[in-house]
Image (tube, rainbow over all chains, first blue to last red; front, side):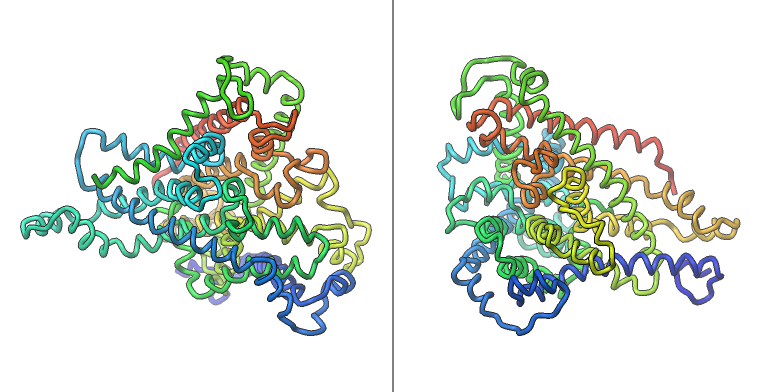
Length: 285
Length: 291
């Protein structure tokens, strides 16, 4: 029996349903793609052109304003800051998260469940609501305007879901493997590093995407903790740039394109990973 | 040994702040200095005293609007999209990829982009003029009636791919025998969807509902970028998130941070998140059926 919504071998009723689906989906796709397309063409227009002919094509393509933003408006610095913060916090999330998952899933000890629950609580608790104590802690540690402040918080943001996803996977690795290694004289750390980590590589790829996107995009914590211009990340830099240039539409669209387009390009190259990774917490199996 | 470093980070930056918020909410504060113990005084001020009571109820009302509109529009749309995609409509691979694309964008960039489009001289009003509906033109974000729904719709634009894909993989897991036997019993398309598929994916509906509750209570960036910290016009778009930020970093009353009141608000955010998530999970547990 053909269960798929395909026109072939379908009766009229089903064909109508399929057509309605297609119309709805196509309209929505247009609603997503046109604003993005308009953003890119607007970035090549002058403010005057944008306001008088919002749907028109730019009269000429010039990357001068891109250079202005990238160099004079410090977007290159924001970009590098974002990259630095994301890579460092992600590396620690993976290292500490996988170590904790290994411990939770492989060792039986008294507080095993309690520890696991503590990690899980981190998924549920909204971290933004904790900004006051976090601010007091970071201030006490003297880390305001230091990348370490957001790196620590991003680590806390990422480790719980990493433990949740990875420990689930590690529990499915046969114990015999561990025993075999132990008989051959393998230390605990080598079991973790040379046996478990390679076996987990596909789950680790999922976890990386699951965490890297929210960390790269996070606005709230850098807004609070990284206030000097030299330390701003891309979303915060974009925000202060919008505050200062709110009437220069042409430049604003350039800023938006710089912020959004890299994500589109990366996504085009590995969309399946992204879809699987981002929904990893909410989808079983 | 393996657990300690990760656990330490989680304890210091997630669990400890929870208890510190509860603790701090019971004291009066002068700037960043903790004062005397006041019991539930901060909560009392929040619920009874000017200006906090009005601001808090106003903000909470908007958060409820966020939740309802998101459930009604985004998650319903997501459910249908997910179902269509799972049933492999022509071009499903393409649709799936495009619908998910905006989920990856930063809320800040999306907020500013649509903020530009929704300006009085922006793209949306230009489009309305183009199709001859000049009378429909509005200063979308400047009008108290339209501002909150407009911002919610922008957020839905960014986020709808997420429930779509979650529901898609849920429907993928519904066994084809179930569907086949329903069709053989003569069930129509709508009956199959509403009586067979939806009951079987209740667990995913629960997850999405809980995530929507958490998301609606934590709305901040969307307001910050499209309406500003004050939730303009005239606090019409204010949410608990923005009110909390203003209280914690100072601009509600005398322009100085109110750590006591702010902590009280954060405790309420924790409580609401916890209670409503629990209610959803236990409420839906009863409706779950085995495939």
